[in-house]
Every structure is written in structure tokens, then in C-alpha cells.
Amino acid sequence: MSAYDTDNIFAKILRGEIPAIRLYEDEDTLCFMDIMPRADGHCLVIPKSPCRNVLDATPEQLAAVIKTVQIMSHAVMSAFDADGVTLQQFNEAAGGQEVFHLHFHVLPRHAGLSMRPPGTMAEMDVLQAHAEKIRAALG
Ligand code: 5GP
Image: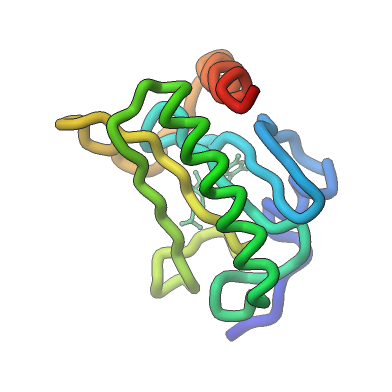
């Protein structure tokens, strides 16, 4: 497995070098909107410390991230009056990973509604409006 690349997109977001629509953070984790959402409210939870994925993460990084994943799952359920939540997490290119900083996808889901195909950039004003709803649900 390759070494952690400090120039990956999420590392740049953590350093504030590229913008992100931030929803929540604590000492160890950050959550922000996915720029190509496969469902309204699709967001990503990452550790603030470096690791590529589940394969090199420490138990402490995993524990911190999953705690925030649960917080965000409740928030998106409430914000979008969802019927369920899908969590996705990919490891290495062969496992479907494209950005090599550990992340969990949190996707609010509605009964009978499929996820959108990947790869379509959202309108920024729509993403901002969705982010506002999630922030409000976080209280
Ligand atoms: P994965 O590595 O889990 O396959 O996918 C990476 C995810 O990051 C995708 O859902 C993609 O839409 C998202 N993504 C890629 N580049 C950016 C970016 O610059 N900003 C944000 N907020 N999300 C991104």
C-alpha cells in the first residue's frame, strides 16, 4: 500500500487550502458536504489526522470517525426527514477509493428512491441550502 499523500484533496481541505462546506467538527474529525452528492445531504466524515483508509487507520482514528458518523447520521435523518441512512466506505483503488484520506460517506435515503449516479457536481447554492438544514438539525 502506498504511503499517505499529504497533497490529497481532503488534506488540502483540512489545511484550509481549498474550500469545503463544513457541517461539523470536533477535536479529531471533520464533516463536510460531498461536492458530487449521490443523494441530497450526502456528506463525508474524515479524521483530522492523516491515514489513507481503514487499512492503515489506528483504532483511535476509527473510533473517532465512527462516533461522528453516528452524529451525522442522526442529523441527516432529521434534516431530510429520511427513512434511512446509507454509509459507504472504500479502501484503495481496487476497493473503489478515489481520495486517499480515510472517509465515510453518509447518505440520507428515502424509501423507493435510488442514489444518483456518481460524478455530477452539485450547484453550490443547493449544497449550501442542504448544509443549512443539516446544521440546524445538529442544533
Ligand atoms: P471515494 O474516494 O470514497 O470513492 O470518493 C471520494 C468522494 O469525494 C466522492 O464522493 C467525491 O464526490 C468527493 N469529492 C471529490 N473531490 C471533492 C472535493 O474537492 N470536495 C468535496 N467536498 N468532495 C469531493
